[in-house]
Length: 216
Image (cartoon, rainbow, N blue to C red):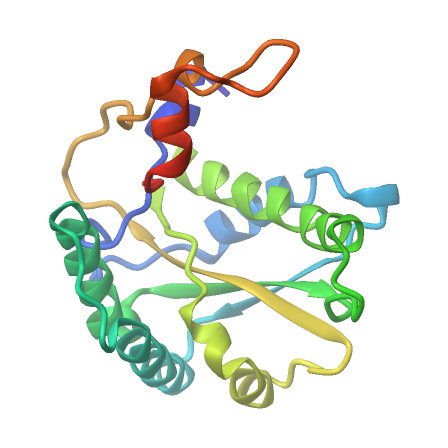
């Protein structure tokens, strides 16, 4: 893996090719990369559900649209959010047309005490696998984006896909497709030097401003 892969993998929504099939073997190979992620006590809690069936994708897409619309209800977006909201709306409108949806799940339910330690261990043992999967997809010329809006209907989707709700938590859904032509330049980010403190919290004006601003 090159550093270019790490700096050019980005959320793909409008660049997803809705018409070109994605090979099952490509998905299998990417999932084999995903399971090499680290997890607490090496418990490897990940489980994956690949959805290709048009009827199931259509139902998930309906749940996703409803959740996306509810999330936007009453919000007044800032000008710098308009492009992201436009691409998000595009995905909501076309989710059922994406060749494959991959639901990433973890064994167990979130800890009831919600302590930072327990929550960090629970989610920290699954999200590295999500990122491994996204990088592997990108290396094969496939695009994805980490979505969570469907979780507003987690139980309904669990019933649809026979996921044991009381024993398994859905944490992300990745729409997967080949990428349409577009820019593959490194993603713009605030330089780490402006966000990093040495032997203490970063105190520069730029660091404080960046820490308090929106993340993209």
